[in-house]
Length: 112
Length: 227
Image (cartoon, rainbow over all chains, first blue to last red; front, side, top):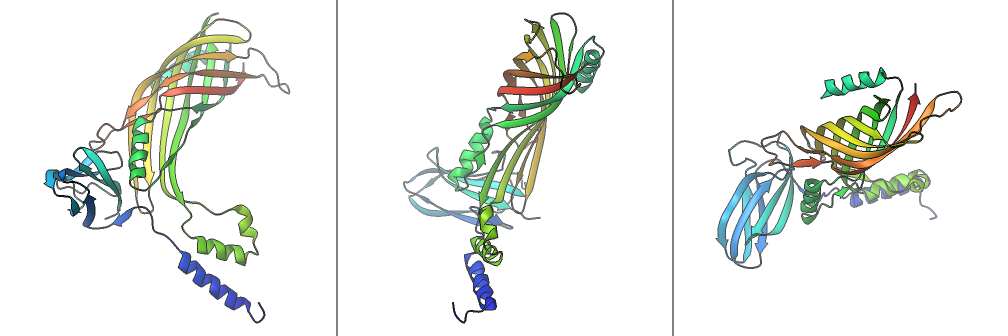
């Protein structure tokens, strides 16, 4: 530690702080139209719905669509099925394959 | 309902003997929809941790309408929460610890609420009991209740809140101390255990019948001034 000055120590700590600053939440912060990718292991009938924090369906993005196995994507423009903006909050985008939920993506919508 | 509870409390207070005091509840609510929602978020990688117990505090008045009939009126506020926390800045915590000579480390790592779920229910209760014994008074009974429920979710950038109201009931057994004195104050204690039915659908077109369900067994203790 000889020769190591306090300002140097503080500088190193600041660098460490910035390097370790992990503010990645387990959801996507969305302010505008969002594309979500998903993978289906088998071919089948796929439904993709967006539900609000009260588990009510606000938007159906895919309705009983036959898809091959592989990677797919859907785009949500942040509007509900009636063309209205359903408001800021926490939403879940759910992919259902043959009646079974296979993936959930959590979105924090903050458009306003 | 509020007017009925107020009238009942007036009736109780005008009786020959009444007590008024604060209560503390612990309850085990069903919260089926809330558990489903937490499970959904967990599938999406956000493990929302829900409370096991709903806690409540309240104020109530108890009086005897006759030798065997005991009336109780009161209100209470119950809370049932959920939270997702994470230590999102360990570097800052290390820096704070070093700069404070290690003192900050003594207090543990700071948790930060990322998603906070809060359910609260304001309950107005009116109950009637049949007294089986006199001192201590063991009684059984129940009655209707009105619940005003609020559910809110806070995220780092958003807040959403919904409300609802509904009728329910409580049924339970009470054990009341009939005489007591603490430093010259007529202080008595009481306890009640039973079941509360209180499921409220939130008032919103988009809720899809989401129900905040405080129904479940409860235990309540109270300390009262007896007059």
